Image (tube, rainbow, N blue to C red):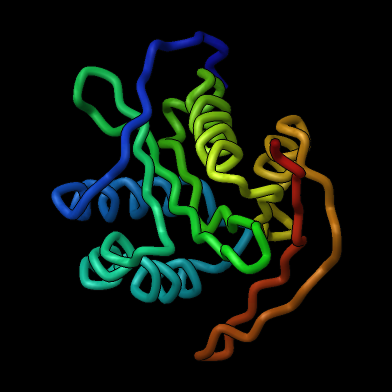
Length: 172
């Protein structure tokens, strides 16, 4: 991990960013997830969650927001957030920083930006699912103030499951 802090900015992502989001997800997943889940599950989940049509559908959804973190017009990472207005909560559905930029404050900057954004909108809680074997991400979320609530196992089809923790944090 590189401990150098970089100067990056957070902006809303839009349909023009779909391809870059997909490419960054592919690079990140193949560098991060082997050893946590199988290559077959990585391929299946990327096809499910990062097809261009799926990214475009989520970008167009009024209950979803994508933020990207950039430096010199290069996307270093992104987050996808799903609002549940009735529960006054937001799911951190996707949060990925390219591994070469991890440890530089990008993930923290992106999470703080999203927490402040949703706090101003009156949401009181943010939550996420994280694979139980994904120790680096669990540690990152704990450092950001997220606490484990419960364990879940979700059948995602094709014989694959997600064996996750639900973690959450109250926001102002």
